[in-house]
Amino acid sequence: MSKVKEEAVELEVQPEMDSKYRLIIVAAKRSKQLQRGARPRIDMDIQKHKPTRIALEEAQRGKIPFTIVDDGEM
Image 1 (cartoon, helix red, strand yellow):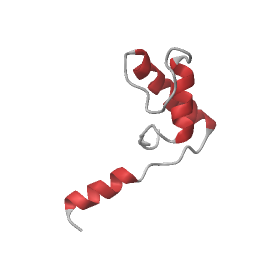
Image 2 (cartoon, rainbow, N blue to C red):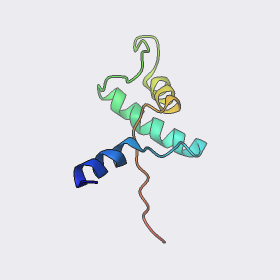
Image 3 (cartoon, rainbow, N blue to C red):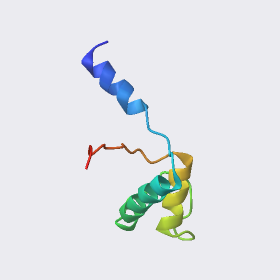
Image 4 (cartoon, rainbow, N blue to C red):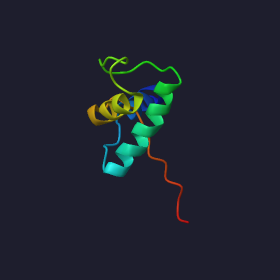
């Protein structure tokens, strides 16, 4: 497989939301993006729902790409 194809495969694989704590962290960061003007990735009325609710729904549906970075042993 060429290097370009390998990178494309890596982008398709997203880690699963393995804990409620990760869900909250991802949703909180996404909420900040929405508050700064990012467009929602799901069809929800931004006039009726707060950014935190939209971000949580996006995270639960798997619409927010994220990576898990291992900082190593502390």
